[in-house]
Length: 106
Image 1: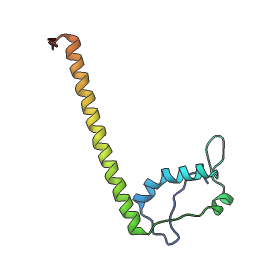
Image 2: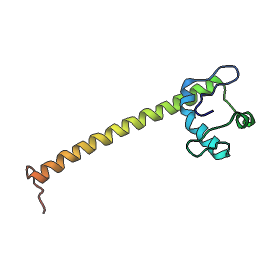
Image 3: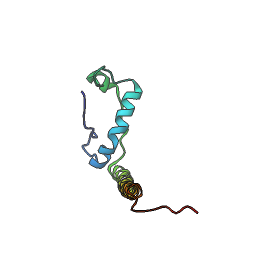
Image 4: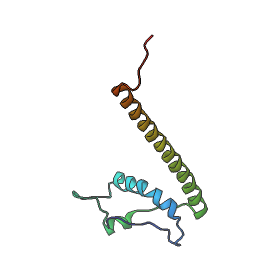
């Protein structure tokens, strides 16, 4: 089957929760020993039919997706701050190496 998208039997599935659920899905399938293959992991139709899935109702999926989206946004902000600090460090190191700025040792 390769890559796939999951949905509930009623067709009600939050796209936000599905995108966050891909990693969990991959870990579950690999950890359960259902996936096989040497070049890439795949799940046969026969093994897929053996699987059972617990899918939360749509409002809970949306709450979960909201929490995960907030966490993603916070991580993005932290990455931007880290990049800003790295750029600032590079600039300071350049000034120190060229002698434009001196360090006073007391």
